[in-house]
Amino acid sequence: MCPPRTSPLQNRVLPTGEVVADPARGMFTGNRGILPFTEGRLGTSRWKHQHWIICDLTHPKGRYHGPMPARAWTPLFFLDEAVGLAAGHRPCAYCRPDAYRRFKAAWATAHGPMGHQDMDRLLHTSRVTRNRQHVRHSAECSDLPDGTFILHDDQPHLLIGNVARRFTPKGYDAPTDRPTAIVEVLTPAPTVATLRAGYQPELHPSA
Image 1 (cartoon, rainbow, N blue to C red):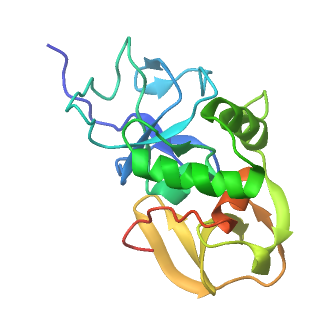
Image 2: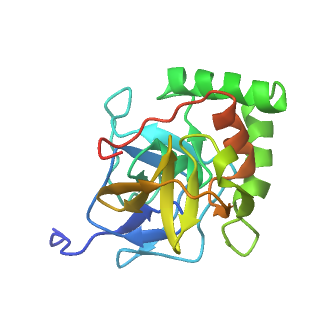
């Protein structure tokens, strides 16, 4: 029998795209394929396919294969859906069909009708480089929709209305005024357009 782990696995995703070890688990899990662990830490790979999805914590059929499976997809965790979107994921069509349909409809408004494979192909080039660098872009902050993540004072902040809230693994800090200048945007550009077209991500209560 294996002894219980005393430190968290490296499976918590940040809005900056990094995957870190943190005891907080958040509201959603996600899938990028089978990512093997060695002593609780990920290897070189950060994805095995382009279908990066945001899933419910509970499987629709009640299945659970554990946090560190050998032959099943490796669960990653997000504070909320806005974090998952910033990291380059989109809603899962299987366990979150209503969210997927809303996302797909807003995506069609922003980009034209598209199946999930074409959506994921476009997302992949907009979220990460081949050497695992998170793709970022610049935009006028006043033009960005709610649910977008930006870098502000070198920290990830979530935009909601006229305010920005600094992200922490456990939740969001108190609001500050939304910046008025051009900012570095963490949420991929195709997803920002989808948010602008009306998709509303599910946010952590601290937001």
